[in-house]
Amino acid sequence: SPPPAPSGRHPTRAPVATTLADILFAAIAVAIAVAQAFILRSTARGMAVRLRHPSAPPRAALEWAYAIAPAVALIVLLMFAWTAMHPAALRVEGTAPAVGVRG
Image (cartoon, rainbow, N blue to C red):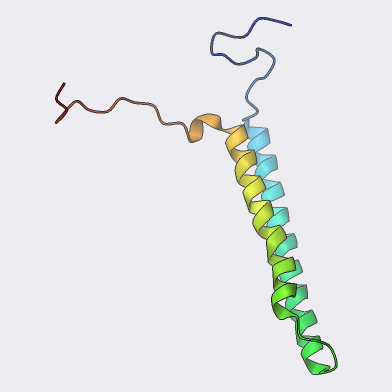
């Protein structure tokens, strides 16, 4: 195994943040958003049809939960992917000012 790089990172594990990766990420995020919009639209239409047939049991909350939960999970996954691609975007380094500190 090669020795670790001076920054503590493995030398073969370079950051993935490139312009191409950012473009692909944006395209995938848009595709996911469009797909989720169609899923929510389909859920709303299906529930409207079910309202016209009173024999079907009402399960609106459950249907919306099954439609919205994957959307929330995908948002979280996209956030994790973005932070993995851009680790420095959320890193804050600095020192606290010594004003008002008595030692």
